[in-house]
Length: 222
Image (cartoon, rainbow, N blue to C red; front, top):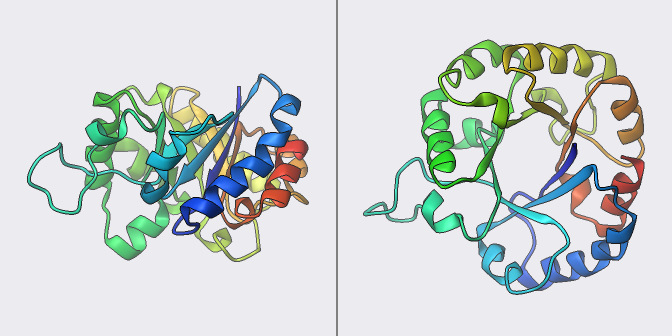
């Protein structure tokens, strides 16, 4: 199974999201059964999208490390479980801008698992060992991991496919052969090269996923 995860981050209104899905849904019959497409949308959009028929799976971009209860402003895994099948955890932007630590990531992963939501756990190469070590007491072979070099996120300068393969092989060895995605300046022009050379299970796509036409080209490349 290959995975293509679109991470919209803090972008799109409900009408914009529905328009995007209408355009991209036109290729649903072209998608291989071995390719699972997952769209990580803002929380403000999730409920509206569940009301329409979608050919792809949905993911949340974040969740609370706490259960449901007196935690103002938080969205618990229990609140998300009827809306999504996946959740992105530990993205470098969450670590950088919101001070998330490895311990917080572990709490979020546990909450996701309790609600039967599959975590997509983001890893940074300099900290692979410590980030994975915190999770080894959990069923990590069931997770999806996403390797994102910090220098490639939003820079337009992706990692070399050969280095991505080296890191992906290392992660697989440390995680009982879990699925490993690559994220960081992936687009329709380099997706095929990465897929051939890097021994990847798919991609976590950021800004290139916001335009329907570009995302369709990435799907076709994969």
